[in-house]
Image (cartoon, rainbow, N blue to C red; front, side, top):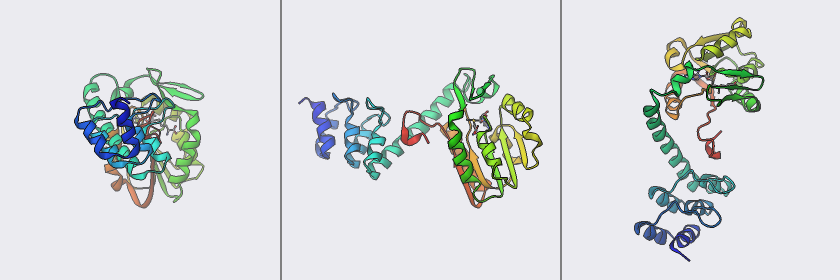
Length: 269
Ligand SMILES: C[S@@+](CC[C@H](N)C(=O)[O-])C[C@H]1O[C@@H](n2cnc3c(N)ncnc32)[C@H](O)[C@@H]1O
């Protein structure tokens, strides 16, 4: 057995001392064994949270995928190892927040984020695409949007939706006949399409055109809030969450959808 296989065995068996000593000797913790699994996946699968932590601190990639596209977090979740799962989830959130901040700085002049709002979008029956042919919204998301609508409308009252997209969630919200339904949308073409399709004429609908960040002062307090933007970062979602206490009425219901990290099932819904 070579030292990498020994590391995988130790991670699988919960041998903390062996793992630590191999880490201290400078072993490459990013290794994949002959089955395509990393030491981190072995530790996660067997619920050894302390080893998961040590491997993460030593630089093991939390988001590496097995040949069947399973991450260490998925392994821990599927085996019901809550501690290991939470350690991985926190590592994932932290690194995505940091990477998001870096990417945002690097790309602030390039063409993502706010620039998405200046790009053309194209609409078809079942999707909206940005100018890079990346899907902004697709019809398969309809059942998800219906479930979000059901949740945020369960207390009735005044509902806020941030991000109109294809209007799937707003169509579902309308079916609950809310007392008032406010929609914030920032993209000029999406907004124009909303108006063309009669959303501006509905008695219980108020459309606020602009980035949510810029129109907060026009918003009130709501019984249900849904958030699903595009071209934004974790940081934006986090920032939105900081405004939530002022936007959501006591007992109100909030839900959000965000692609976060598509390859990592535990963070993609
Ligand atoms: C993924 S789509 C929303 C899909 C929608 N939930 C549905 O059911 O069809 C995201 C929408 O958010 C809008 N958007 C992006 N950034 C925004 C921002 N900062 N403020 C408001 N809307 C934004 C986009 O133009 C796009 O229409």
